[in-house]
Image 1 (cartoon, rainbow, N blue to C red):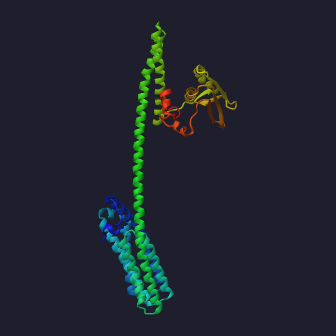
Image 2 (spheres, helix red, strand yellow):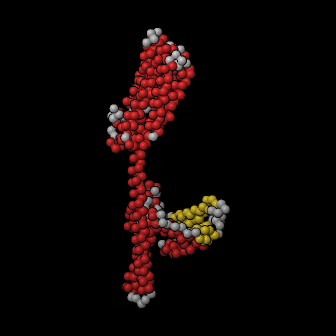
Image 3 (cartoon, one colour):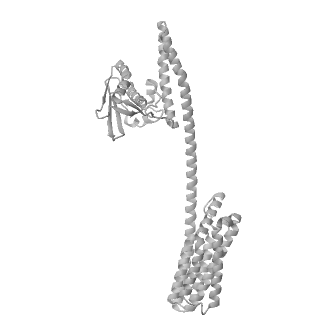
Amino acid sequence: MFNQNLYYPSSIALDPELQRQLIEDTDANISRRSSISSFIYLILYAVVLYILPVYSEYFFITLMSGIFLFIVALLRFIITSRFKSIYKNNKEQWRLSFALLTTLMTITWGAFSAVLIFQSGLSLSSLFLLLILTGLASGASTSLSPNLLLIRIYLVTLLLPAAISQLFMGTFESLTMSFLFLLYLAYLLLQTNIHNRTYWTSLINNMRLKLQTHALEKAKLELEMANRAKSEFLANMSHEIRTPMNGIMGMTDLTLDTQLSDEQEGYLNVVKSSSKALLSLINDILDFSKIEAGKLELEQITFNLKEQLGDILRPITIKANHKGLEIVHYVSNDIPEYLIGDPGRLRQIIINLVGNAIKFTEEGEIRVTAGYKWQDDENILLYFKIADTGVGIPEDKQQLIFDSFSQADASTTRKFGGTGLGLSI
C-alpha cells in the first residue's frame, strides 16, 4: 500500500540509496508537521459543537465521535512525537499506522460534518463548517502532498461526505453548493499532483546540488593538500640545495684568492657566476614554495627607508652603469624617517623590479620613486614605482607576467634567464 513509488513521480530517475534517504527525510518532515495538528482537529471539533449545539439532540453520536476523535488524535500524536524510535524499528509499520490514523480522523470529521450539514441545512453555521473543511483540506494538500496516495484518501474522505449530504437535500441551492464543493475537491486532487511533483523535484535537485557541492569541496581540499605537500617538498628541497650551493660559492671565492693562472681564474669566475645565477633561481623557488605552503613570515624591525633604499640600489647601480644606464631614486619627504617592517623583503622586491628594468633596458635611465597613499597614528601604506626606458610589455601580455613560471615572451627566458617567479612572489 505504501510502496516508495507512491511517494514521488516514477518519471524522476533516482539512485535507490538516495531515494531511500529522501523518503526517510520526508517522513520525518511530515511527522514533525503533523504532531501538533492532531489536536487542532479536536479544538475545531469543540468550536463546531459550540456554534452548532447539536450535542443535546444527538448526544450519543456527538459523544462517541468526540471520544473516537480524541483517541485517534492521541495515538497520532504519540507516533509522531516518538517518530525516531518507532520509525527506526519498523519504517513500514510507522507509515501504515500514520496513514491509518490520519484516514480515520478524516473519515470521522467527514461523516460528522455531513450529518450536521444535512440536519442544519444551508445555514450560516453550515457554511462556517464548510469553511473549516476547506481550510483543513487546503492545508493538508500542501503538508501531506509528498505522499500522493495518502493526500488523495485524506481529501476524498474529508470533503466528499459533505458534498453528498448537500446533494441529498434536494434544493437548488444545496445542489449548487454540492456541485461547487465537488469542483473544489477535483481542483485539490489536481493540485496534489502538481504539489507532489514540485516537492520531489525541488528536494531531489537540492540533494543533488548538496552532493555536487560536497564533492567539489572534497576535491578542492584534496587539491589544496596536494599543492601544500608539493610546496613543502619544494621548500625543503630548495633549502637543502641552497646549503651546498653556498658551500660551492664560498670555496670558489677562497680558491680565487689563491695563486692561479689566468685560465684557471677564468674558469672559476664562470663557476662563481653560474653559482650565483643558480642560487638566485633556488631562492626564488624557495620563497614561492614558502608562500604556497603558508610558511612565509614577515619581520617587524625598525629601519630608515632612505638609507635602506640607498643600500639596496648601490650594488645594482654598478651593474646598470656597465650598460650605460643611470639609476635615480626619490623618497617623498612626507614619509617618516623610521619605519617598522621587513627591510629584507623590501630589498627582494626592489632588486627584482629594478633588476628586470636593467635586464630589459638598453639605454636611458631607471627611476625609482617611493611615496605614500595614506597614514594614521600607527600605520602607513607606501607605494614604490619603478619606471624605465626599456622595451616595455605589450598590453595583452601584462596580466601574464604575474602568473607563476610565466614571462611575457618565452624567448626572453632563453635570452635573459630567470624563473618567471619574481612578480608572482
